[in-house]
Length: 337
Image: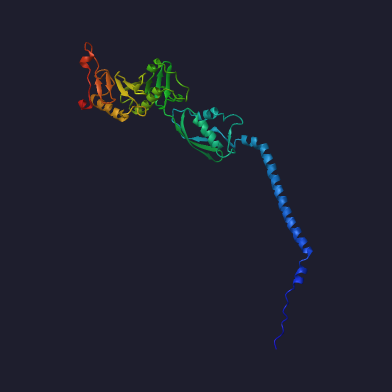
């Protein structure tokens, strides 16, 4: 006969209610209150620590920023290698001109993100040596790398008071480390005709000559630079009075060779009337003539005037006892083949 198993009866509702006494509720409430209290205490403590830390940082921040480990100094700034003519100390000069070398104004790696980059970009953009500021990057621990495009000397402006190197936009450049040979190798802009017509004096270093004739001459000099020596050129000049087409005015230019030959160039691309031949078309005419007749470096055998603007026109020199009417002639490209 199988043994009888006494199954435990489930507790009644009254029994379960008896187990959940007010004393149990109190313990749970106390436990919850204690946990919440500890959380609030920890939060208040954290806020206090942060507040004290912030106040403490404010007290030591100036001295920390002033230490060499956090300052961005000139010798820690890496820039694109500069051409030989640029003053090697131009970085310090850029910082000085922007006031970033003064106490309390120096840069720190602790500055807000972007602040160091913006201030350095603005400082180098003011340098008369710099054409354009590219990317600026922070490098650990306290270095900065800056990409720079430098201005290129394009011409030497000859004035009644001296000479000034210019770039292709007629910005007056510092001489930097340019030697007398470097200056002599630049295309020469003869500004005396413009000075006689009221051209203002040279601008400050780093500023552009605010005259469209000087700007056009600088632009033309930059294009002619690689060919200056082979074409035996001496200087170029702007005509004091611009050429007028209706209400528009266009500056025009002439070149002069070492033998005294005058080359009528006309207007410059970007500042020319409609229908003006390109720079390359004019150069092709001039080079074609030189290839056929020889260099323009001596008086003997060279013409008085060469017009390359719309077609090649040659005006020979006038010999003693002859009149211009007997010797003047126009020569087309076909005639010199």
